[in-house]
Image (cartoon, rainbow, N blue to C red; front, side, top):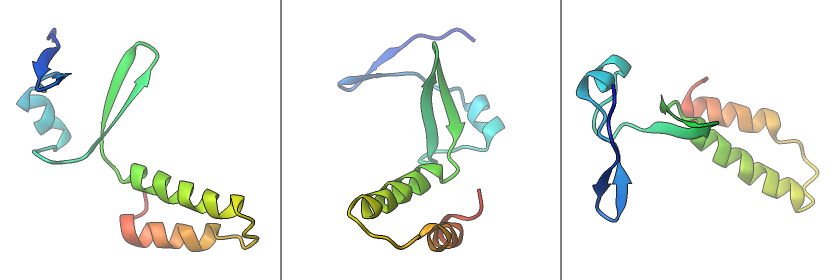
Length: 86
């Protein structure tokens, strides 16, 4: 499918065909993960990884502040309980 970038408020956007969303099981307000890979924009169904990355960044901040305790196992249990095992 060929499409073009259109104005969207003060930004630009692409329309995603309803058929594509249906194939992925996505609807309005569902979260997706988007990133650039070479010359491609990849859009993936959201799977909670972004929240896990943020939690990991917080954990790393604690370590940088001299906290000696190893929180990995505790953090993994927390993340699995909150976001499921991804």
